[in-house]
Image (cartoon, rainbow, N blue to C red; front, side, top):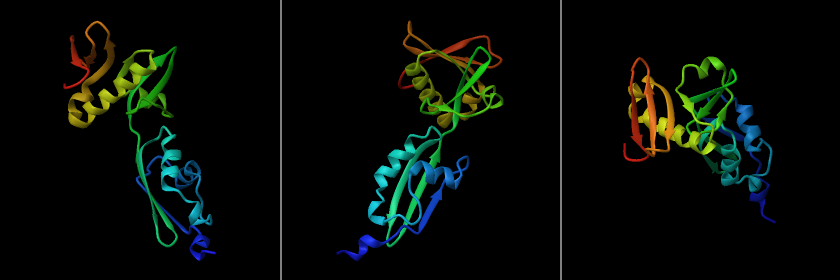
Amino acid sequence: FNPLELRHLRYIDIEGNRMLSWEDVIQNAQVEPGMLMSEVYPDSIEKMLMHSPLIRSVEVEKHFPSSVSIVLEESKPVASTFDAGKATVYSERGRVLPFSTSTAIRLPVVDSESSDEIKSICRFLSAMQKFDPRQYALVSQVGWSKENLAFEVFFRDAEFHVLYPQTGW
């Protein structure tokens, strides 16, 4: 008999959630106050939370004697597609986010139907947003040029487009 196995989870500290409520995080993590600490596995909680398209990254730690901390970085919308009047918003990882059409129209439009190309374009746009937010703000449309093996970027109020290599731009 090990009395430490009878410890129960009493506190769950969550940081970084703006769009997701405390309840949303707890439900997605499948943890709740009162469960045995011996049944709380940080790596499992991280995997469960990463299934949500609204979460970009997560770190989970157990703390003695009876608490867990969850630090989130939520996904940001970086691109959108439009098909027959329906808007779809994508995260940095190319995952669909539950955002409105009003959000979609403010984002660069992806010209692709391939999910792999959309993911690649979203990663590219995320990097651009991180390293040069002013340039990202001017992007109106992005596609993948198979002929040039490059991202084809169109800018607002410009009559030309720019090809960015797949890496090292």
